[in-house]
Amino acid sequence: MYNIVKYPHNTMVVVMNQVPLNISFRKALVGDKMTSWNKLVAKITNTQLSNGRDIFTWDLHNDGHFSVQSMYQYLMKGSPFTNKFI
Image (cartoon, rainbow, N blue to C red; front, side, top):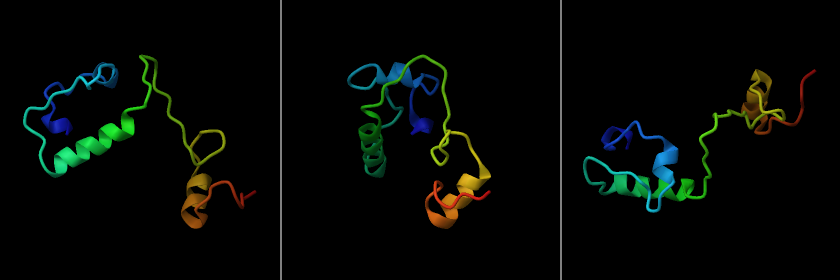
């Protein structure tokens, strides 16, 4: 989708602060592309954005920071919060 949007450097805040979304494409979305677009819009519709700085968090660890241990536990057990190694 990024490859066919008219203004690829617009921020998400600019795009999402209007209803309908403030976005246009260089060519029509048809078939799978239209389906993908509709699914994406459905997922992000209720997301609240601000002009603040982005914050990245790691959901597989209690404190939000990445650890190899949390990834390993997730891959081995499916849950990063059980059987912690000491």
